[in-house]
Length: 230
Image (cartoon, rainbow, N blue to C red; front, top):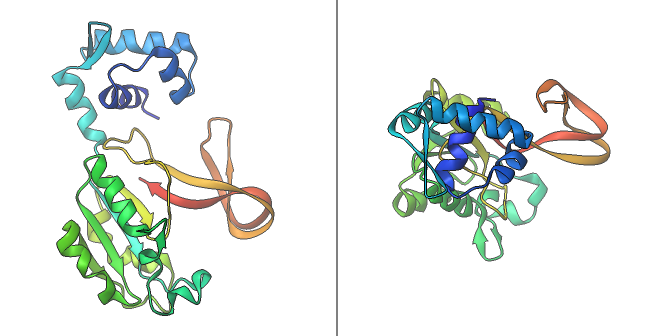
């Protein structure tokens, strides 16, 4: 984790954030945050004005390397978990609380300033065409959607991933709160805890929450599930 980028990102999003709030978000001690802020001031990344922290031009320039370039939304699959709903509607276009899941994610990305969005489609691909005019997204077709998994979907979007800072999202994920940001200080993979036996990809991680190993299947464990950033 780049601590300076994390600090600057939080101040960029809320310049009235307190040191205690920063310590909680960054999983650091109050003393460590205080030291980090002093270092950032000495490096001319931030300045203090009226009890507010403000990013300098140098700070914004430093943060620019961590800007999210785009989001890739995987929407090619059939969605067998949603049968019979997906017989006529792609899973990402199913509604939760009267809102299509994929549209909710697009709006959340727009809310933080991310407008370069690529959607990889396959099953019932024509159903997604309206999103081009409505949200100015790009559609990429995966002809292997019925025989291969998400790896093939990413293969067809490779030109939009290579050399970029990218969110990898699933069209059928629904998040109550917006977890996206214009800047990301490190790569991450979201997960959920599953009780009992599971055939999902199980994560092993250290005390710093760094992923050290993955394997298929396990019991009472955290599994790969949801958005990814790298």
